Length: 376
Image (tube, rainbow, N blue to C red; front, side, top):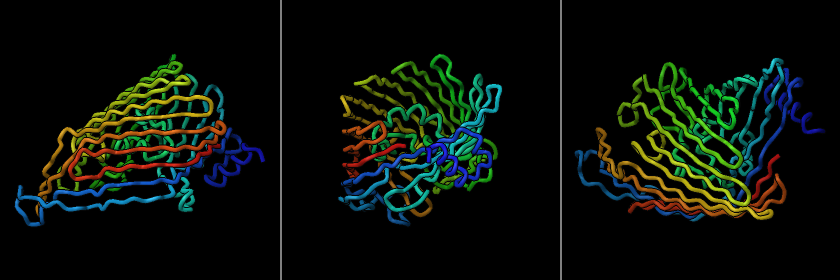
């Protein structure tokens, strides 16, 4: 069976598109599996016993024991359909419906629940408008540094946008056409009937407002091997929702810029982020992330360095029953990887990443990932 015919059958079975037979539909996917060795130090916390007055001495308590484990890991495998139908006059209907597939635990369509699922219209002269669950403009800028195979390389300890800068539900996205290399995107998240959040849940924005909950814009320039971009996102907490400590959640924002160059055999990226719309630190923080790559024959060598730092290294959090001193350490990350390409679609890789927490409370971690990936 031809791939396009199979795609039509799968798309009809999965999403029930009655008009799928009249659209140019493509079935695609990626299987990404590795065997990982993880070495994690114990994590300690300074905790004031319940009932103590504010400012009382805190005890050092181990909250997470250290571990050294081998594990089979799925690195965000996925299966999806995407397509486009020519409506005439330069107008097209476009759609994508993607599922996360957990290849290691045997879960069907269960991994990464907010994979892209959207539908919209595209015009040759004015760009496109799409609605659903989509990649953010923020990631489309800062994500230029997401070049490794293991999902543990570009995570919350290297990318502040990991909380709300990946994919967002309930989103409306405008993407401009290509104007001689320049492009623009704008996203609105509208979740008026969603659950009321009390804590930050990554990539699940709750009902912060009765209208727009979050907005995100980005401008990019691409010319041959060169890339440059800037992005800004902000929440709108007009409902004055509070966190678990009873504090009103202020409107939060974050911005970033990125540069890249990729012309075989060399490539590099540099990105910077600053803001408080993340789930790693309380209040504002900043991130710098640098990557480099060198390709020769079927081989690719990659390296990275990341540095994340909070504005406030220590915070005293006071509740009616206790006062807790929270240490917010600087974090450095180091990555190194080797990849061998059997073809354009099949590769094997070995990657190392270390996270160095500048803290007496521990938490350093290291991972060696040995895996394979096949795209179709």
